[in-house]
Amino acid sequence: MRVDIISIFPEYFAPLDVSLMGKARERGILDIRAHQLRDWAHDVHKTVDDTPYGGGPGMVMKPSVWGEAVDAVIAGGRPRMIVPTPSGRPFTQAVAMEYATEPWLLFAPARYEGIDARVIEEYGSRLRVDEVSIGDYVLAGGEAAVLVIVEAVARLLPGVLGNAESARDDSFAPGAMENLLEGPVYTKPPTWRGRDVPEILLSGHHGRIARWRRDQALRRTAQNRPELVARLELDRNDHAVLDSVRDGASFREAGGDMAD
Ligand code: JEK
Image (cartoon, rainbow, N blue to C red; front, side):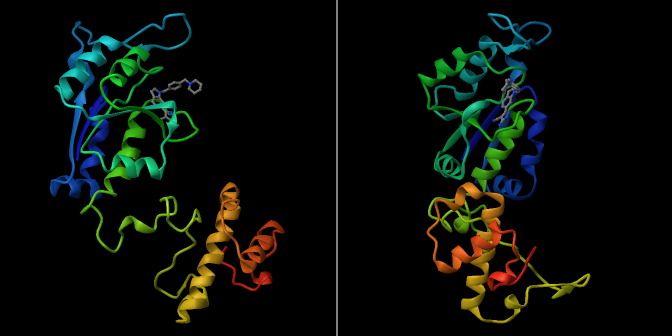
């Protein structure tokens, strides 16, 4: 997959050389190119912003500079264009899976109050353009959103993750563990600072371990993401677990073991 990024802070993307994505680049699975938007500004000050029509606070990124930059980077090709913005449609695991099937992505992270809307209009008529938001909080610019999106997409590309950590079980993947969050995980030693790994996990009773894990997942989902519980198919045991969460009662009282 080829990934182009046009930004006034191309250095922001240095982390894409590290770890998972560094290896993907070495293996030739990912070809990431970060471009300096100011290279397409022609005045002595390399100006990329101007005051907003209609008044109001802040500055808006100039369409002329973005237009020249995008034309030069795409050079007649047709990448999928992604513009992070607080007013975009939510970036989800389903969207990451869709992007992972594309051969070429072009990211246009803005600063200031964003990009002149005619740029999105113009390329919307020539390319597939998505305005996306990574969450309901306000960033200072689109660069951090690009890092998030590229990492979420890159780990889905064939050959990026090893078999052991492969992406099929993710909580938010459509068709994954039906919208249940992951429960707690443990490794050696069995006792650490006086804290024991839940006995059930050392028992070798695979059926009971699976049930316990589902109970823990359900507890966490109810506590941290109550809006997801409505979508679950629940059995009688599940209802008992949920009642214990709602009552603030301990899971032990509901017939299980406490994890937190
Ligand atoms: C791209 C510039 C900063 C900050 C105006 C917006 C309501 C008015 C632009 N999930 C996400 N949060 N933030 C971004 C994001 C922020 C960006 C840019 C993405 C380019 N900024 C900025 C404030 C405003 N306010 C909120 C009140 C506009 C993002 C993503 N993806």
